[in-house]
View 1 (cartoon, rainbow, N blue to C red):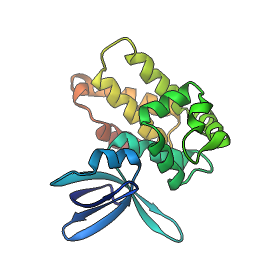
View 2: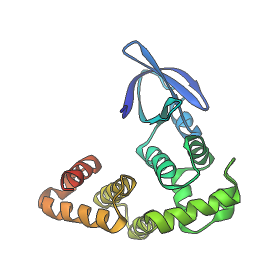
View 3: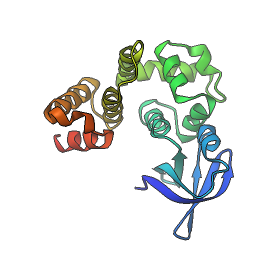
View 4: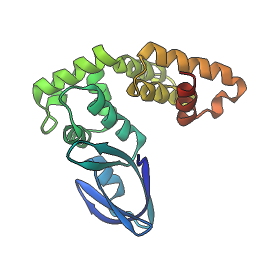
Length: 206
């Protein structure tokens, strides 16, 4: 599995990039948000990737941030009827933070304005993320914890780890308890914990 690419950006179009790594050019399909961040970049760039395999094709999708990639994977894995192309359309249609806010507020009208989504798909996105996954309540908790306070890096790490574990198949309550237990076990070193380490430790404990 290809997790990321680091190399020279040799071609940039609104829907795809080509990055050359050690003489090999990798073409990745991207959302507009990633194009806006990386187009025109010089020197070495890093692109987070998702390697998607089907019976007929092997495709790389690229993202400038982990938030973009996490939402892409969440949509294709957890919402019925949404494939990679639709997930890219969602990411291209609005920033990740706006998408989360609209889902939390059940704003079907705003989501249905995304090109290619429509009302029925928007309703399915909200329903399935709320009822089947428990993602929305995690987003709500993260918002409420930072609404009146300066952002807490440690809390942000925990929230991102919980969301990643849910995407990997953990139930919401199980993911939250696992992360909380790992943070308690870390004790004084808790503020040095990273999302990747929390995920690795959680998977080892399964």
